[in-house]
Image (cartoon, rainbow, N blue to C red; front, side, top):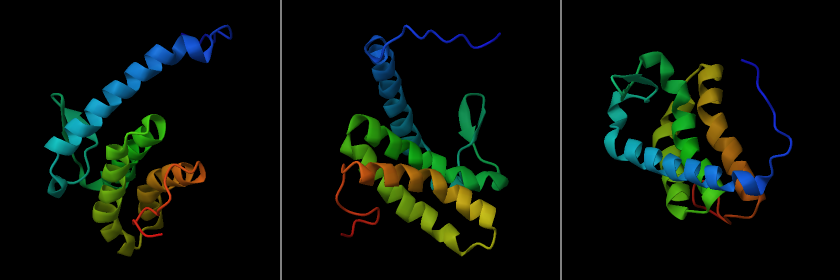
Length: 132
């Protein structure tokens, strides 16, 4: 099935669906934050509807915390900014000592790109680590 683009659609027509998507996203981000134990690794795969980790998937952690930053960027809800910032600093910083450039780079890129976008739009005046 080929992708069909409807160029007649306007942003206003999509607003309700986009708002609903971010409502669902917020619920999923918060549910994962409540239920996932960091010592289990990074949640990537689902088994019977529940997240599970695999040792080689730790590089995806940037997506987990980057999702909260994207949520903030889209909705302005500060709790997602604080969640993304806190988890990035607390959970991702220990990985910086690793020798694997691919893993370290991939781990950080989603959160870093998101943070840079938030900062360039003036949404937050402090740095990711909370310093000015």
